[in-house]
Image (cartoon, rainbow, N blue to C red):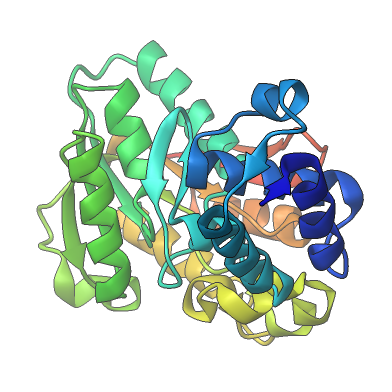
Length: 287
């Protein structure tokens, strides 16, 4: 038996090699609540609470995995996103707050739009966070999503079912869109958070991302950093209804390049939008 406060100190010390004190404490609280249902309030009010051997073993196992760089979201198996709880594992990226900002922009635009049942497709859906959240908050939307990874789609389908948000999922490679999608198939909105980190940027990344999250969903070759934006923009031009919109999450280092690409392709009202940290993060354009 050990007191909770002492266990917290040991846990934080074990993962301190990778995380600063405040973040390490937040991770401890996430694990504590997930494993035992103890909240931050419980920790403050019951610091002298004793944990039994089984609880100590489970916390020790979690701390050991985290100390190797494994993301806590993969360890507990889920993560919050736009008020939803989404299952995540090593086959999908962990949804980021920046993607929540993109989804919030889309939802607000849809609610102000004039299309009663907009047809939407998410390209490279991963965990399904984007289409599921859109369906949750714009229930009348007809939402589809594709991904090149069957393992990722299995996670996305599970999340759609658990959150009661029907989404049509399809295994497909957007790089082959011209032979996959029927010419007459049209959408009101195309959205994508494609791979956009160049290989040369890997050296600046946190080990827990580089070693554990799927490289297929993260990286693009240095020689073609706009490959997916170019491809998806071409798809959007062919399959968006008149007045339809294209939304991208982007690499902060290529905001102007993506905007210029869309302008040159003939998109209208191209907007480059910053995230809460002031970094170029989203692009919206119309046809």
